Image (cartoon, rainbow, N blue to C red):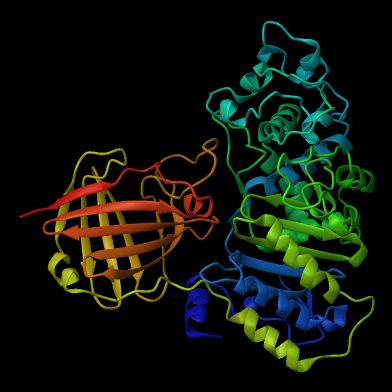
Length: 527
């Protein structure tokens, strides 16, 4: 294991074995899922290596990967500075967990998927309830077939009362007839479960799902009224995804207990509605994993698989015919491309019987998995400007972020930027040619794709930061928010006694959009 990875593991309180393929034939993890070798479970190690190599050669950025075969983890890895003990923002992968909360409530007789949505919130209904709203069922929420003329989530999250705003949106089509992706519909499932149980779904799921599966520390964002956002906002570790997928692969059974009825698992993961064909298809529908049908907050896949997924590549892929689960997190602009690599390399690596031990390939795989890392930014460790501005304070012109002053401290091994917003200090230390771990509540961070459920100001986020000089007068930092998919590129341009600090998010970069959400900070050196 390289020294950088070992340092990260020590800083995070994790053992080195967390990253290494099991050396024995079969081993048990204290976290609950057993470990094994690929060949013992009928998976060819060269196929996994080919997948990892294809990822390395692609534009796809993975943060974690876990392959489970016959209920045993056969390969797992995290791209440093990401690590197994860290939670990761799930985005819409959260939806499958919300569906599971509905499944538990159905099993306990608290509701039926045929129940009318309007019946749960009589005080939040508009003055006139039309036939479409009156007929809207829980199943229509689960299958993204509400019938709205336009996706309502942006309108909903801009309000204080999300339930009332959702119910006020026009429903142009007969509920159940037309698929349209609708994150606010998933929020309504969360609201219904909380209305019936008196608990947020993260709390409702704890004794029913999280505790039996050994999933600890799950967090979930809430709306202004304290209801979990449902369609996004869940944060869990990668192994939680693997366990969740394994539960569904085992049709709701776990450790000889039937946690979730097998009937619900079958119903939730079956084809219920067809997505409309894209206006400008880029490939035949039969090769498009977003055109295989939709269940109850689960996507159908090619190869008779199903999955939960979230923006930028948060995946739980369940392959019943191969008795396998694949969990991945990352920040990728092309989620279909990632799935293509799964089908190209991992699927054919899975055989019907155990394979002869391949010690050479297993050794290469162990080495590859233990050395996965996101490369720090490249550049010079220092410059003449660094010596001139180090230790100096710059006053910042009034701006949206509330930053009043910034101070820099530079040496060849590291750098520190200290910003003040009134009486609040924000200090970020950056490694040079390496990642420096820390945390931050710097205003405007981290970047995110949806405003609803935003944690309160002052929330601190785990951070890995690195900084280099791109030229004599330009210092560039990368701030990786290692419990989210995203990072910022923060560019400091010095000109005489002035500095301009600009922020570019990875979301904007990967979506080819300008980052206009944060102003450029303009400062002048004191003295």
